[in-house]
Length: 316
Image (cartoon, rainbow, N blue to C red):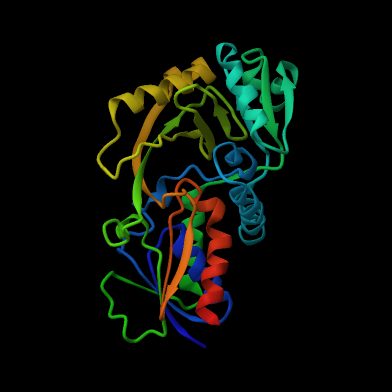
């Protein structure tokens, strides 16, 4: 069986390494020692939402995303939470909700009473919502750590960057934004996020709050923690979150429920996502080198299907 080097320990690299190991390949992963901490995947929302993502994406994102959602359910059923997605808008922005509905599939329009049934703490706060009951979410940090630990347990070797490539049959580059400047088609899109903690409100599924300028989402995690994100800024600047983004996130959380005004801000973060001009990921092979990159905002959603393509190329 082939000896394969996977460069990168974000969701793309760990997913392809996991699949290769399942196929019997000898896998070495090259990444900074603290990885996956600090990767763009570490700051992801973890929404497995193929139908919602269709609103601003090509049909293939929905098609591949449906398969990706199923893969995560099969591989990590213990951390995939399938309670759907709720898309809401304040009354003043109800036209945004109608537009979102027209551009997406597999949802139903619900009124305030059903919103209250799904999320009691949102009772009487919103008149209408879209409910995508077949979607799910995952804690991305848990998923990344489990994949890494599973790889190590089953014999994969993790080494620092710079390992000589000559000893490997195949080299798979999944280093994401590190390819900026080396791959002339890659650009960076900055995504900012907050983690906040509140014991005054309970939410059981991701909530997307529509706004004409910047739609935001709030994703529940364990221990009364909520992830609020994410900006999509055409920039590869990896500095700290801006004051403007911080205010927009906190305003969105407050609009969802005033209890968030008393929430504790426990972390802010920035991840620069690698993107191709069409905002779709791509797998390419040149000799014994394979690249998997360009996930844009769809890393967890699309990595399983793109990893399958990379594995097929590596083992053929």
